[in-house]
Length: 443
Image (cartoon, rainbow, N blue to C red; front, side):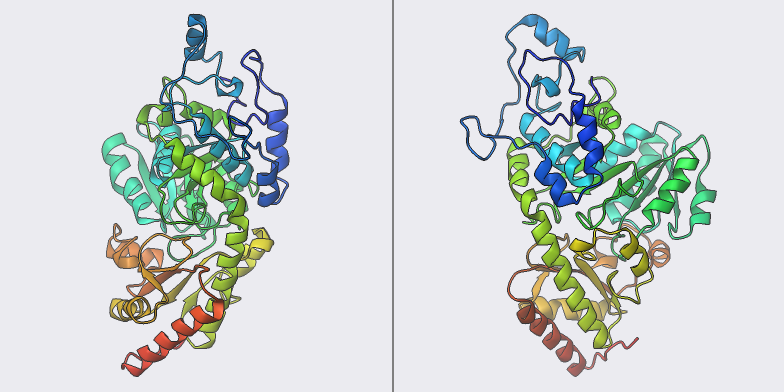
């Protein structure tokens, strides 16, 4: 199949089987633009009857006019770049449109969307690594990803992982086994500790060793563009900020066309054969939300910075990359897309699980500030105690190495209500906490 089939920028007739030479040029040009500008330049699909919104292609299978056409489709001679579709587990037009938007967002040649973030991560790693392969990964990762690398892949696939502090470039370099290590994997902003990865330096180091760099950018869409900074592949849990509604589970793989196409290969493709297929109705919903992602991210980030600054001024131990005392504040300023801010999450270290639970319970059940729930990127404020929830797959030693304290409250800052209304609710809870004999944890 053509390397441009996932990133063709103009719809073509069925009689035109040649690939478009302009597709790669467009992909590379997008790298140099603001993510919002890139999205606005991506192909817009119209409805079947001229509607401004695209139609939903809900078919599981597709017709051909001639028997020879089907044969050529199965040999890879004809594909989605020419509007030839076989079966929706392979390619679906509506999902392909969302994938083009994701490629534009991340500035990659191609992308394809999946049924969940974990399916995107799993498929990429299985495509890049074979039996006996080796991965170097950050020791601070989402708990599900950590469990995949630490437990599942060694047992099921004989793929092993060394976990390292990605802030320590020497440790990263020493963990890479030349000829064996296939992937360097980390999160652009770590879950839940909000440490910022030095994507340019890590990418340079990995590439010198012939290693592919895969970055989970779920915490920082629009804020960071890892491929523009040197990474090879970006994965997303679209369920979070990109969706924004806490009502959809979805993922995406964004990267070189050669990789994404190989993942959809009929004989060897991890996405094709494992089948984490996105429903086209979900793809349609998400395509309608991406155009206002930039606006939402700006408000998430603005409120997070205001809350973090005020919490710090009250004497609480706050982790937020936008604060000047954050160890990676200067790094983030040197690599971020500054018009979007420093991210929409902050952490309050309450030191003990008891204090963390009291605060979250009061904020939800008495202060109407937000909800005790995992996930992030919702319009409401969401709170969880990471050590006993989204990082519970890690043992105590692994949590300590990752910097996850028992009382770490991860807060996804929403934008419902007014900023001052929500701050007042948070401030009152903190005052109540002090009045109940749980003293403030001064720095």
